[in-house]
Length: 448
Image (cartoon, rainbow, N blue to C red):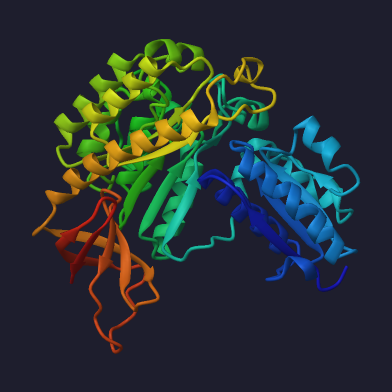
């Protein structure tokens, strides 16, 4: 097939974005070129998300529209919906290839281009990606989840946890830093449960390779996430390190210490709480208590006074009473989050909670969402006010329609930079010092 083209539509999380980059790298290595228009492409790959109904519904709209406009197109579904039987039935005869992302190495064979390649999950994550950003990169350290939260489809969509060897991760990051990348974001469904076998070589050999040896405080020959962070921090270069997403049950004292001590690791921790009532947390199968979560917040702020803490929360989980929701509202006031991603519960097919009656009304879910948002605005605004008059390091991400640069601080605060004039140089992907002169609930303004 000559002049082969592909177009990728990505729906959902950071992991899906990273997966799409690897799909692009895989296809371009085999002679495909990216097409801007899905209606004129040979292949359309949709990296799907099944976490929310709205994300799922988007796929049901996209597939028939693309098929109607482009009769010869091959549509490939990967991501969370790729193994859902009900989705396959609904889109029968409209999707050409169903591709669980861990089977990416078999795509060429499915397309009839070449014989099946050897490769497992490690091979899939080891594929060289076609990065969409020139200064900030997602680096997956693993895939899958072992937690089986009662509301979540991820373990069924992606399988059990499997992690990349530390050396492979370090190699990818070193190459990115050499190319001038300024922000490295380590990602996995449960990033802080990372573990891999330590390579069989001694400390002097590791130091010769540009890495300092660090003792694994837990067990002998296993590298856990705190040590991986330290290893990445030891790579030479001027760059930031971020990571997502953390599970509270795996947020150890050693990890908090590693974040505080590693100068390249940003002072921002995303720590999903999901609910503030212990009975609801048990029904969600979250494996921690409200008290444990609050103790983590206190420890983080003890070691990193100016750290920003963000979270995810679900309102209206089956059986959640008003008093139980009030526990979540109290936790929001106590934790003083900088940002929260609030979801109104919707049952996901195949999950444990989908078998429980969804007994909280839409109106009540909306009210609870609005109540938490009101608290969040107050805590976020109060947290931001302490930055007024301070000079912050900002990684510039782009320019808005008003000609103003914007970016983020190490604490993941959105910054709008006062207009510099038409003759100003391109600052995208650069670190700049910005003095903060104005703050809002979820952002700040300043000048270089």
